[in-house]
Image 1 (spheres, rainbow, N blue to C red):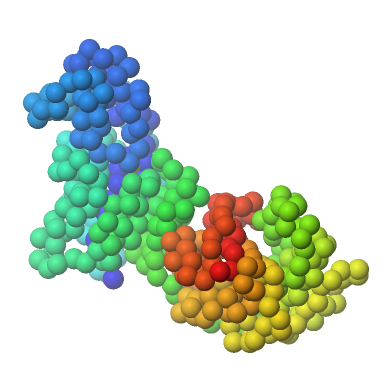
Image 2: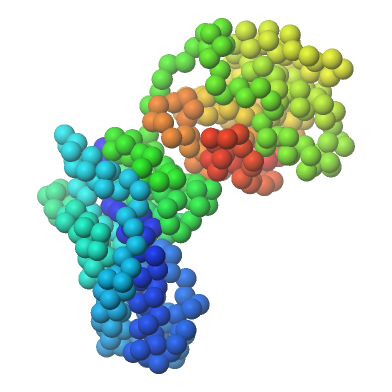
Amino acid sequence: MTRVVLFDIDGTLIRTGGAGVRAFARTAELAFGRAGGTATLRFHGRTDTSLVREFLGLHDFADTPDLRDHFLATYLFLLDEELERQRGETCPGVRELIASLRALPNPPLIGLLTGNVRVGAALKLAAHGLDSDFLLGAFGDDHENRNELAAIAQKRAAQMLGAPVAGAEIIVIGDTLADIECAHAIGARCVAVATGGDSLPQLLAHSPALALNSLADVSAERLLAAGQHWERPTDWEALYQARDTRWDKGEPTPALVDFLREHPEFVAQGGTVAVPGCGRGHDARAWAKAGFHAQGFDFAPTAIAEANAADNTGLEASFYQADFLAGKPPRPFDWLFEHTLFCAIPPARRDDYVRSVARWVSPGGHYLAVNYLQPQDEFGPPFGATVSELLARFSPQFELVKHWVPRSFPGRTGRERCFLWRRR
Ligand SMILES: [Mg+2]
């Protein structure tokens, strides 16, 4: 259960259009005589205190509490002025999300977890009318290390609620890898949003519980359930019979097409390839066209009938009904390829899935997967996975050759990741 929701400020709640960065730069010039002295600082995801200390160090000032206070006092004065001139914008969906969190029957405690010093946070939020929405916070003047701020926020939440709060009961919402890291530092779940520093694929690579293009894409209920899977019973055969197969785009997955084109060394070697969850066989046929001996397998007899009925002329492609999780492989394969299979399997059966892949692939053979990292719907299938989960599950039996963000079908862009593994 989620009892506490902690928001980052810059890039998550609001975008100030660089007011903070400009106030920093003007402080360096006006109070310290160092025009351009903050140009090399990386601001995203940092605490104000760590930025000030880095500035002092870079310019050979003594790192004393007095000088830090002098910097921050000037900065806050100039920040106020900069915000007056240009306050920037509230990020999409923020007001609606906060309102719907507060309207829940058991609303979570809503707070801040930000690298801004307390007064800077208040100035930025007041400029957007958001200053009265947060009941607690941890700020850049509480600690210069963001991971410590998460622990401080957790302690303050426990004090307010009058009982200990487990990390798993906390959701941290932020726009950078630093937000994901600080959530993980206390065992909290991070909902990462690509409205600030980092892109959706960059965020997904660091295994947030949920990643979004914008907070306008999420309901309060879905947000609080981030990292949990809710299963919808699925009769695959019935879906094929009803022709309700939205995952089938009528062509091989773009990631596979690119892979076969970009890896002539593998294509030249050829070999056998199994495609479990092959559906109507588009991916298996792409392997066969590249010269491989391809066998497709699917749980749904209708999918297999349609795969066999398609034009397989001149191709080494054949299709069989099989239960990939339970069945024995007809032979060990040099390659196993999958797209939309792992994500279709209930998360409780993921161990069985890993064992099956290991059974089907010869030692030294390859497993190429296009994994769906996170769907937007709370109900699966498809079920999302995180990069860290995939690495942990497959590493014991497979050596990771490489992973990358592939070209995807529209609607999945940035949410898929390819993994090429070699069987140990
Ligand atoms: Mg931020």
